[in-house]
Amino acid sequence: MFIGEYQHSIDTKKRLAVPSKFRGELGNRVVITRGLDKCLFLYPLRTWEKLAEKFGAMPMGESGTRSFVRLMLAGATDVEIDKQGRILIPDYLKEYAGLKKDVSVAGLYNRLEIWDEKRWTQYKSKAEKNTDSIAEQLGKLGVY
Image (cartoon, rainbow, N blue to C red; front, side):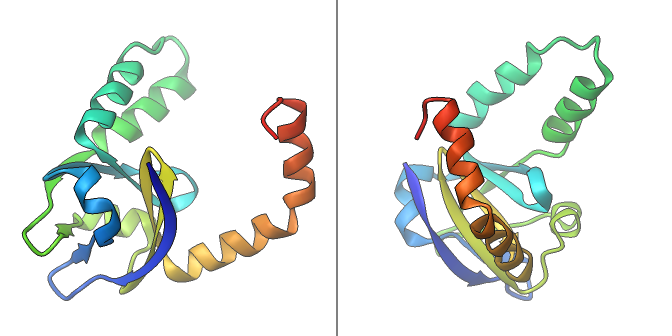
């Protein structure tokens, strides 16, 4: 399980050090793809395979479903975690998420999210202002 929030930097060779706390559970290869809200999703390979299977089974008759599946699957790439615990983030994914140098890596149960640090700070600030209404919605769903 991935939880927590970490600040890291992308080096000049476009590599990002994965927080050491997560490396054991991730294994040597991971899948990185476009995420929601202009971040990147990083999955352990075994988790991605299950998710990709669900994407592949989605009905293709709806244009919104097709678009989402295309973005997630076509945008995905598998990358190796090197011996220093770094991954190489492809240019098209860096561009999508607006990643420059400083990034935040957030653990979200079955995946990691990689955010531009400024965008993450803005997102958190906005979400924190809405915690009451979010809690009420979760309560209606029986989650909280």
